[in-house]
Image 1 (cartoon, rainbow, N blue to C red):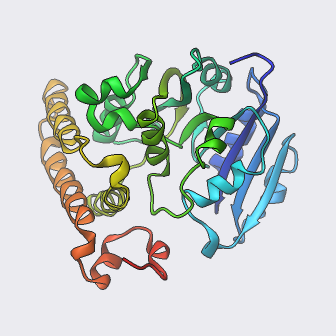
Image 2 (cartoon, rainbow, N blue to C red):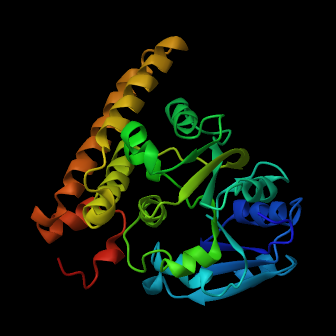
Length: 310
């Protein structure tokens, strides 16, 4: 990426708290400045304009809750920009230092790299199992992924997280951007299309954000259900790509970690959570066979199913 390239940020927001204010402050302090921060705010009682009034380049675009979509809302933000590169963040992803934007931008070392995503570090309150999952999914070593990695990495080849990711905008526009209507996983759907079109995705381990969740087993179930629905709805991306093996490898590695740190009792929790994840994933893959009432019990995004036709 050329030093003079323009970068805009796009951030969906819904009832943001103190962490969002911290995110904005840290974006202001970046070594590589952003031109604009486009906030796609779902209308709530939170006074977003006051929260962002002293942030240079911040602009707020309001939408109703019924209008929000994981892909559509982000794409609407992208269409407001004419920058060279687009940085997408979630409202709870806190830059770990002032070099996040600079290091993500530096990951575009070759013309075929059209997306780059950051390393996610666990928050201080993160539980041990989730902390290890961060390490597993976001290792210390950077790498560039292409279609040549599908045989070894499987579905991980497509992995790219809009918690914090940067995209080359012209290619984004040319390829149609994020899918407008999706339950979840808009980042991997787009990234998978890039890989299949012969482009590359960079993982920039030195570009870091602080982001993690302490999900319960049931929350993992809902999340994996929606993840599997997104894969089932996009066979053009995910069919024929190995996926479940990566989950099994994570379980094995996490169990070994529990033994290594001499906390074997955590394996009970690991098995419990992994069972919920697997059940959610399998049911999501087969969602077309399920009655609507059960789908609505399984999903974490009930609004997605309003007016849905299978």
